[in-house]
Image 1 (spheres, one colour):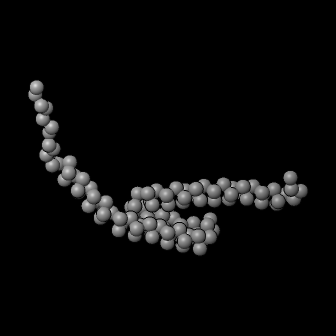
Image 2 (cartoon, one colour; image 1 turned 30 degrees about the vertical axis):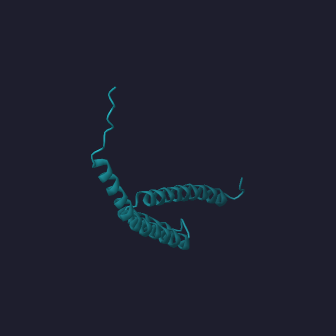
Image 3 (spheres, helix red, strand yellow; image 1 turned 180 degrees about the vertical axis):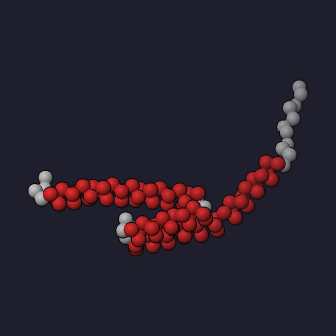
Length: 109
């Protein structure tokens, strides 16, 4: 326990900041994972904004925010190029499912 009255206050303030920063970091990680999984452009904008805000407030290092934003953009580009191929496969699968199926005839004995 601190001997100085001001040190007690510093300790309380430090605990508050630690809790607030931990919550903010956790929220950022969750937002990032959801944006990557959903491949949503609007979600990506929100994540980038949140990282910029966190960096300006000192919750995360500015370089970390830049790195996360860059990787998010890269994931969005990758998903955008992969999407047409998936749609093409889906179309082929839909055509195959819609085609009339040949029914096997039972041989009557």
